[in-house]
Length: 218
Length: 218
DNA sequence: GCGCACGGTTGACCTGCATCAATGTCGCAG
DNA sequence: CTGCGACATTGATGCAGGTCAACCGTGCGC
Figure 1 (tube, helix red, strand yellow):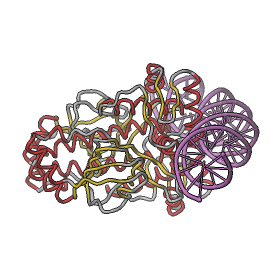
Figure 2: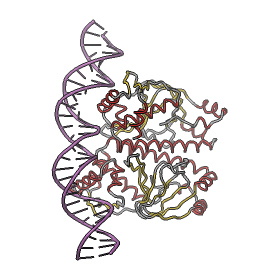
Figure 3: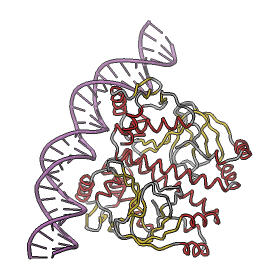
Figure 4: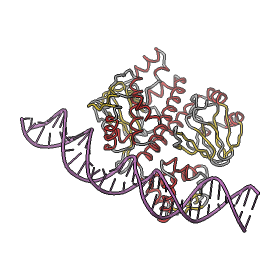
């Protein structure tokens, strides 16, 4: 999921209008926003925090398909049921729109539908990136690509510190990258030893961005 | 990519109208329909044949993100540039719409935009299935899931023979499933030995569908 | 027919990542 | 401060799937 541009498709009047439709809600860390196959009754816009989106196999194997940051929308597919489960990684605040009011708003603003479709297409493109990563990249490349994409996304929402926060657990990262926690941990250690990063409690300090970028795009 | 439902959103009059906008075109096996990052100048509807959609890494590693069958649309993202490359696996016939005439048609039929968004959301859901497959499933499960999804898609376009045609090469299957040709070949042999399939020149005969389904959804 | 290229299969071996297990670190409840 | 639980790191070992290589069948150009 991605920093949203729906809002930039709205003029000031429309912005106040859609704000009036929202219900601010808070979710504690680990709380569930919705589960896969639940009726898709709401659309969410994250205002603070982080959410993991994932699918489970019957035997418990998990694939995280994305992390949602503040600014991101959830539930925009507008299908009958949610395609993934979503839960908060840290304490998270959202604006919640009931599905019916959201689609009613959409019906009045047809130009938004165009925007929505562009947005979905962009999501698909990101999903395809992830397929390449999962299908064809090595552990080192996966971790580097993960760090680079997070850096870019945080930068876009105004966070440009040299320390990249990683509020999700190693298990979350592993389930996103199709690896195990041990491999993720070892890869971080290896990158640290090579001077590319410094692992700190809140995340990683990126001490050699070009090196990481090279790994990520190889 | 998926059997399309755009057409079912059109009434008879609209169908003749959109047909009039199309340019029937043929592509020989291995011919390129378009390449990743090319300006997205056209929308295609496959009427016959099969197309592979893929991304390449700079060093030549390839990830096929989907196979398009007759009935499927390509280029519906309506972004500036194609997100993937596409080429014909066998001789393929398509209806080609220039992007501008297609979007002009769309502008006149706003209900189609809604349909288009549903379609894109469904694509995203399939992409997420593929992420689970690539990130968390074993070789056996990948091959079984691949066969099952092809069976269902062929069934939907009216092909329900017990022999599932596999016009793509082993390399294509491997690049779709994140495996090597050798592993794909071995897995087919293993399934054959267990009685689930019979490998024939045109594809595979499915002799024990429940067994394959069990593997695919485990 | 012959040879050759191409795609597929199979076998032997290797390796990157998983698995299993021990140990470390931090935060928090008592 | 102490003990405990959750999470992370590190090491030892295993194995699924990759790599390398030989071989086979089919079709096609000559």
